[in-house]
Amino acid sequence: MMDLKCLTGKPHRDILSKRHDWRGDIMFKDILVPWIDDDSEAAPLDAAVALAKECEAHVAMLVVVDVPAPMPSDWGAMAYDLYARLHEEARARAQKKAEDLRARFVNLDAPFEVRMAEALSLYPSNTIAMHARYADLTVLSSVPQGSAEAGLRHDAFHAALLQSGQPVLVMPPKATLALTPKKAVIAWKPTRESSRAVRDAMPFLHAADSVDVLVIDPKVGEAAHGGEPGADLATHLARHGLDVEVVVRPSMNFSVAYALLDYARQVGADLIVAGGYGRSRLREAMLGGVTRELLQTTHLPVLFAH
Image 1: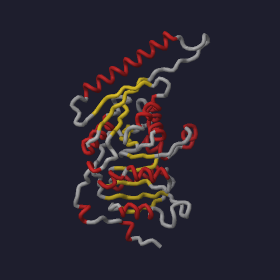
Image 2: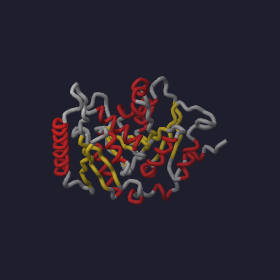
Image 3: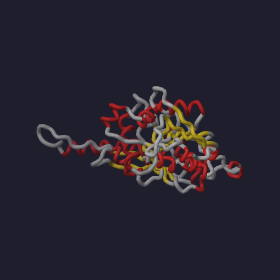
Image 4: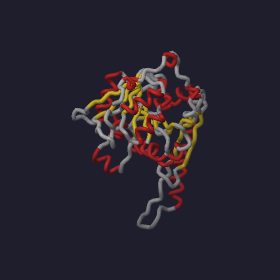
């Protein structure tokens, strides 16, 4: 039987007395903000800049030229001159957007650049994923149902999460990223994705006053959570000096995402850490999914990793 005293993981007094020094973390030195539309990028950019100032990091805003693919017709492929004209129009729109962003953020309080990339043979979301591979963190907005560019936003998140190998921070439109969270909540499952999310979130977890390991509807057993759901992770985090507590809850006939967000709201959490899971678009649309629901309904910043 595991000694439950270790689950609270109270850190040493000298750790509690110090503010987390983000400059000691080498994880976040390149931060990517894909620019999809002006209405929803304020929160992601604010979060990226705040983090960049603390980490002495570089922010890259990415504008993608969405070049329409040649479509076949009764007369064969799209005429070259028509395709060339559409290409130039798309490039001109993206160029203007990039120039507007450079002028708008010329006094941004962090090292930054505005990149323009062409999706010549890829979907725009795949181009975003390519650039995300060379960043330590991608910051995107949440995707409330019915929001502008919801399809592209969902695709961008899906591609960055599953194709980049790097974490994705999702910011709801009115949310603010707390660099020293009072409470961080880990949505724990004994999976590779959850374990990776915890590892990628370590700078945030070290900065938090306390961390809750939330386990919803756990399956007890050697192949699942073990005899005490969340205990092994809590012990691991306690060894890192974190103030951590395990909370086990049933979903009570609600979705897991709803139960998670409801708990985070009750305890006043500033950040959620979660594994991000991908399925076929058809299956996820039919069955729902915790990742998709969090992306659509979260009121808090969520750090996802796959």
